[in-house]
Picture (cartoon, rainbow, N blue to C red):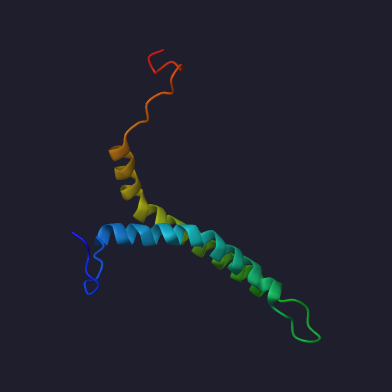
Length: 102
């Protein structure tokens, strides 16, 4: 049944959230690279040296935040990906190669 122009497209809540989490997992390395390179843009005040203490704390906090974000994404995506693997099953062995039994 075709969708009319006035009806909104319905997306299942579970698949929508899974797709957004997968998008987040794809963007996380880029976000991490930007956040880790950001201290290189900081300018020290005139007459003082670089603030290595503040930069070190910032890098440590970004590193911990990235670990926690990756952990949260992995926990959220884990059951969905496991269910997807179970639905697909194990691929058949390639022709001409021995199976698991030998």
